[in-house]
Length: 239
Image 1 (cartoon, one colour):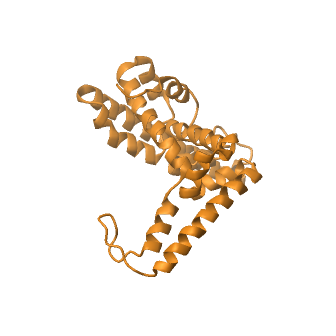
Image 2 (cartoon, helix red, strand yellow; image 1 turned 90 degrees about the vertical axis):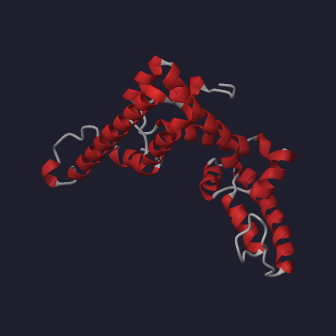
């Protein structure tokens, strides 16, 4: 493959015990991007120019706050808000004149087009998008080229619902013939087997609240709830 592959991080993540390796890939990239954004880079002019212009999505704004560089985040948000004020003042003067450009929705006002675009844009999402796509491509590459990885794949704890569907849909773009068929079979099995396992663990977690099971062992269900959240919604919660 001509584009860069990330075999080491993908291999490492598939060796971890997690309910969705793809979620873990994305979380690692998000953590790195948050650390980058709240590190010395937030004082660099080119970075601030970009964050002032596009801002952050709600989940990543919360992640930046949780990083606990409050002064740094305040500075980033302050200059972003100044930029928004300038743009909004200009658009307010234009009034409700509608836009009918090639990519504009019918009867969309310039002000709404601007606020809608900003609400959908995010510096961190943009920063991790390419590498995440290469991680996914590397997953298919390793499955085709590395027998040891195939074993890791089959022995993994499966995937969340979203990333199972994503891998199923993207597979024909990277694999073909018998390899595609085998990957699909392995993907279907590892997902469903582990989704059923997770539901059973969650069911036992619920049953443990019945007084009749008070003295029964938790088995593997003590942290079943946050792991089930990963399976259902890709949320990597703290245990």
